Length: 625
Image (tube, rainbow, N blue to C red; front, side, top):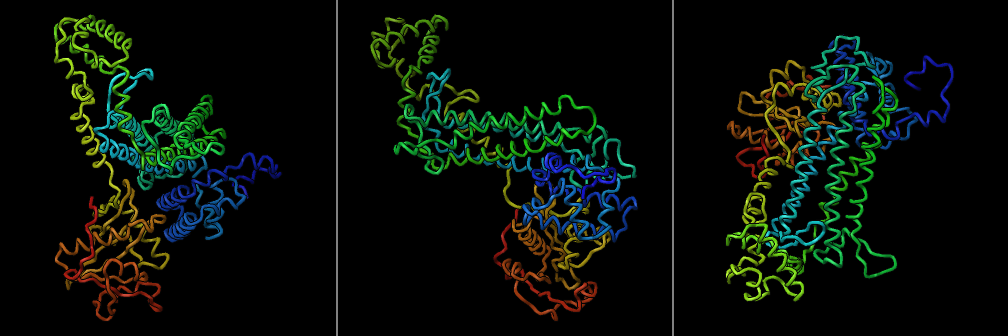
């Protein structure tokens, strides 16, 4: 059933419904819609639209729905719902009945979709930043391996001056670094929350929108309700960043296609990124690179299409804005895939060093060195330039390189030329002399690689980050504790308990988003218990739990605690971390009193495990932020 049917006496034409419905593509916003709905339920609780019990029921049902969506997102497409908001509401009502109908109080699909899309853009943007890091790391790795590989440099596709393959790689590292900077800036600007703006004029309930924004991880709330629901600048910015980066990828692809050609024969791509001809068995085509170059057009098309869509829209929301998603989804998917494929193209790449050196020595690429030599002998550069041009003509006529001309022949062009001219005409001399910052000299290339490596190392940490909890993490911790307690996996904890014990908690985070938590409760006897271990739905099996347990074990060791135990229904997980089974009868009496709060106390299926820190060898050091 549509969310807006009360005003209408006739059903929508099936052709209009098919034309109007957006579920076929906005189903990708399911997780974001659920996360936003949980935050909204908490906001409604704060203004007494929902009771605490109602809010917790809604949150538990929404978390269950989120987990189901993450396990099988395609299930959404089997529905005839109009859009993802309708689908989530229908599923919620099927779980909690009429209570699900209260959640949309004070909220519009206009601010809802604007929030969903920003949440998606933020999440996708972080993945794209990681991919840019990976791509730059691949280029730096290849640069390291080819610091001594000479390559002809080109202007106008004519051989100009010698460079190195490493220097060529670093040129693209700089381009992708600017892409990284642009994307970071774009994500910073979109870090505002539209939720609570209503359809266009704001919500009629006294929602604290700053608190609401922070609960969703945004820096602040948006400032104007009209702008909030009609703003799609972040979509155009991301499409612009993607377009510029695709331009860089396309240029890179064109270079490599040229280097891979039979005429150049500078490189050979691995079989894994090439294909053959259906007719000519000798062919090995650079299809991956050609597709990267080709997909540039579709990303540009998405950006142009979006700008044309919004260029004449009146405030505030208009249905035209539904066109913001398909192009954005496709463009960012294409950008991500092209970066991944570009990195793959450098796996197994073979550089024909003899051929690149031979090509660099041809085309009189050392002519500028001869001109500089004449300048060093006191000849004005413009005159030196003319002299060398005449010398090149003579060398071409003779069919030889400049350095192959005899000294007598050289002196015909200028009497100041001496025997020392030949040492400066070598390839190595050409490279060594370009020793200013950013030049191709070996010491400058080595310095550039070191600087990039330091920058990437500082920025990119692929491991799970675990740190001590802060009060600002309280909402995230409470959400996970309530979720897992609702499923019967953990004991319930009241908010005031969490506030009191915040110092005992550790959290895992990914780009500032809390993804897991647990606490280390210390007993009078010096025994400690790991409690409230919970991972945000969708982050399971990514090392979050293991990292948190390792962090708490290390913390216990620093506190001179000799034994840590846990009560769990997942003993296999803890046994992999070095825990061994023990008897509940050996646990402190206080532990068993806590069990009185457990809804499963009369049918307890928890297993007690412990680890003695003096005996434990397997715990490794976790990346602590």
